[in-house]
Length: 316
Image 1: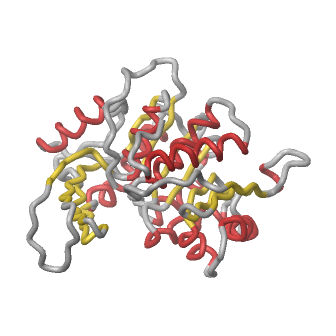
Image 2: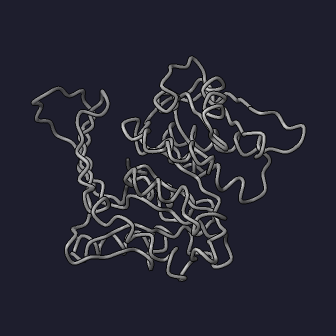
């Protein structure tokens, strides 16, 4: 789940703020260029970088000139202090992170070979244990409150618990926010169901995740996007690897005469990496719409950024 990018320019005080809510942790990745199998003991490189879905989205937003503010939990331990310093260097605001003496800083550990991901363990128990404490700035008046809801963009990731995501979908403190929601993995796609029931937010899913939410199988992104709208989604973006990507809106969320769905084909690239491409796509789409791009141009910009990322280049 790591995005390996150089630090961006210093924070721009006038840039549009985006709240990134979800996992912020250390990614510890062991990489070997050779193919690996069960029990392999191979030479390679081990890196430790800031990661987690919310963090990956925040880093990419910073590269596009926006100001991401992190809402998550980080421990009051040495690893937590180092993580916060690293987040700041990457252009992310950290002053609203929840820090507890009792909860350690979360970690993700993976081993990757020339044949892809071999194994991974996500130790993100602190995020789930912290629960709604990470949302306090949006409730207590610091960033918003039920009486005066936050009105900017909010990127949510599916590492939050189902109950917490359910609360967010209907909570008055989020009623005026531009919610952007993505599952952390296909295994957590079910956690997005509250946003279908509430017809809230923009959902970013891949074809497999769309199938899980609709309890169906789809052959293309357009069919999946329209099916999610029929299931109650307000707006969705569905990606299907290098084949296509579609954006669809419910009638109440599109202008008169606008097409219910648009579909585009990603630029062809040589794939160097896949993990993190969805986070890059989502962040690039948010950034494109923040600068005023139309539906068609925003989708194209997101696909280009994701293609650059997959090919091994920065998403800019």
